[in-house]
View (cartoon, rainbow, N blue to C red):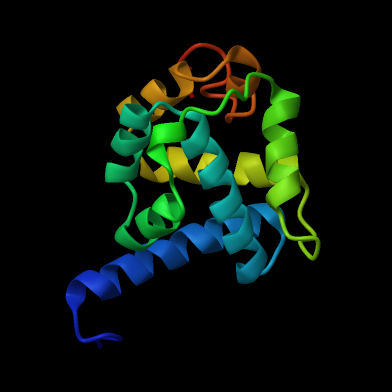
Length: 151
């Protein structure tokens, strides 16, 4: 049964709900907090990437998640000069709502893992390689070094 009457909208709602469920389960949080984590981490990652790399990643996101990703984006001012793990986490910390009960590092890990689960390995490899080593270390273990590791 269609929720919206348009298959493309039903599909993106389903995919977005899948992403939020995964993030929520990893964080032990509700859907609202999962959404907040997804939004903030995607924005920080997007703003740290070059414009081309941000666009390549955006192409692989479900339509609704893509809308969240591009919300308030100003590509002319990118990439941000976030070079260290602490700067990346501080950026996230200042943008997570005060009501959020999720740890910023856990939020990053959950969103990165969800990206890894749903975006092509090639694109994730490009994203990870474009990040400084300290930020790269926040990715799941399979990407934390310089590339994919056999599971």
